Length: 464
Image (cartoon, rainbow, N blue to C red; front, side, top):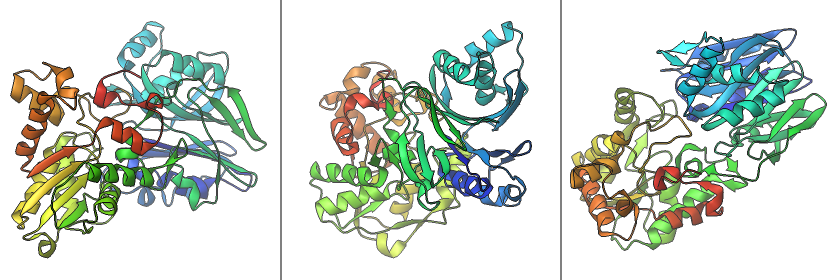
């Protein structure tokens, strides 16, 4: 997942743009970029692998003077893309995953179009969207055309001389929120970016909605669609604790997840802990409900370490997982620990760099409590899991059945004997004393939105 931010301010946008974009640093680890429209359109892009956004852009942003700007922390592509087209010059940033990108690119090649931004031999999603947008009669029509052709998800910000076009993907998988501070306007993926900058939430964009932020205010270019399938994983893992999506706070939802886990549990333990950072709030909820004290047997070394879920290579994910969590032997030794985490995706880090550390330092029992159901399907809507083979649940099914897709519906069913066998296999593989996953119904209840308003694809395989 990437994070995008835009601001329009008559007093100058660069400082708000710098800090507002930086508040999305938990969403991407590859590239970051800023674009500002002043006397001319200026852009800066940096590789942020192994470094922080602030360090890369601290000197750049001061020179990017203008009243309108957009920024991105990107999980995959170099952004923003700047194009001088028949619709005029513009910069564009995107968030999402285009599942049919190769098909769309081939169609554009046949139409005589070419691509200049290619990373590791892959088409840049943002440039692909830009090329479709410029085939529309105007910007809004071009965005609508792009959304109609994309399979997967794509929300975007587009900056030109008019202002900032903000558009949320047709299914509403990824969020966009509009904020206002006096005569200044901003748009963001993470509403937490508004809090310290003084912006108040005006509205959450509807799926498919297109608006234009200008120095004069907010203009609606396309009304939203009735379908809404926002990504549930925002509350479970990817979102920042202080953010709100669909008016539901992330931290509170995670606490409710932890409470739901505790209600279904009867294990005796000496402490509850959360794998920092995203498991912490789940553990807080578990502790509040169960009465088992909350402690920190593992602590994270500085916020500067990337999330081990987001880097594209397994080698980099493993390195981050190994280095960022430091054990406290005095708290671990001899204790029965309930360890809460947001999810088990691949399971390699949990096994090799969490459970193993606890065992090495004398944990008596390790009871894993996971805030969502087993992940069964690679995400089609964001840049995260990309293959069935890498998922821990599918590895378990393959070990039990000889195929990772045999009797799949039985393994998804939480009441089946197959499900119990799968969970027991994963627990043994991880080296845990016990393992309990959240029920799907409890997870939906904890989030607090109707089931038909959520994307649950990675757990159910049902396309939203």
